[in-house]
Image 1: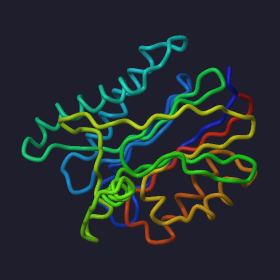
Image 2 (image 1 turned 30 degrees about the horizontal axis):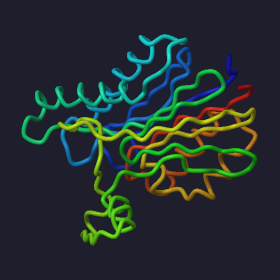
Image 3 (image 1 turned 30 degrees about the vertical axis):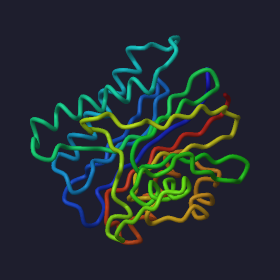
Length: 240
């Protein structure tokens, strides 16, 4: 079995009145990630918690030996959040991001919806493993296909996919081979909007425990104003 160390830290930040971030963290299932309630909609905390609960239950129910269908599990989470939204906010619904990884057999299965992010650190280099599902990035993809797309500056960061949609969103999936010494970071945009990747590379690469890495990233975000909830899950692979 993969030998790893993991820890998480979440902070409400310096401005928000509620922490709507949640963590996916189950060491027995080797399941790690983050969920962030969508700003501008009610019930963000409830949406994120429901997404985490359904995904965790789905992975545990599948068992350690079954082939894991993360697309189906994330879609089930989307449907559960959409149903909850009909009760909490029937006019506008509720939503959450969801970015997670499940480690089995020396590999990590990654699933992603929204603008939380996952990073890998390997041999001194850091790589963002996800792409934000925002208006700006969607416009970039469509322009690459030759389409003419316009959007306002105020819209550029708006989400085009989230958990809780009436029509289930496309789930980005990846399969990663683990190597000894790999480090993985899952974090919400309260971190990524304030910390450059080159800074993250240095902080994640220090010879530290996962709890120290998570704390260093959250504390830096708070030092820079902490306008949003800031959440980090850090995983170190000792042996795949």
